[in-house]
Image 1 (tube, rainbow, N blue to C red):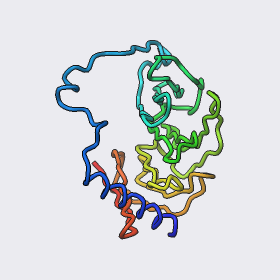
Image 2 (image 1 turned 90 degrees about the vertical axis):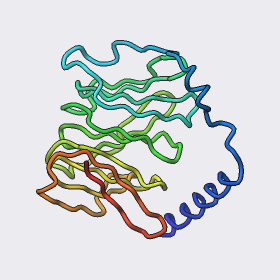
Image 3 (image 1 turned 180 degrees about the vertical axis):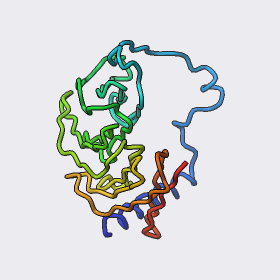
Image 4 (image 1 turned 120 degrees about the vertical axis):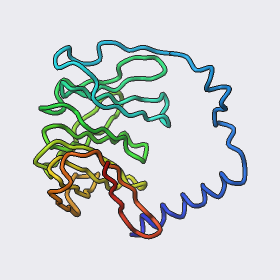
Length: 203
């Protein structure tokens, strides 16, 4: 609870500061209209089963890093500036990678979820990623993963109609709720640091 309150105070202060002055780093419509392709990276994943199933960008790192999850069950990390593969695992999951999420604390943490119903925690250090833990809180495909702003815990949603809150340091379950009416849906999670409320939105 103290961690969430501390994070709430820092985020509130940051929001107030943003309201007082214009952010010089925001792209204007004119700049956006001039965007062009900078890098093209081909043959990231296996030809069969073919395709990238999910991806997420860590824009705050240097260099910016892109996580790519394939239908072949592999995870690849790409240096966005150079278009180079930083790290690749042949088989992160026994089925397709269905969810990816970077950590919040710039510590190299990222989470993956798969069609095998497993959520895994990874750590990237010196261009090498290692599997830190995995949990088996679901009996079907992982539909979504969202982290709390503190980065200390996250929520996963599965096609089994269950969502679970867990510790990101070890993957252990804190709370889980099952609802057979949910089915296989995409999910997004919103944490209210002020009200201490977890809102789960399904679409």
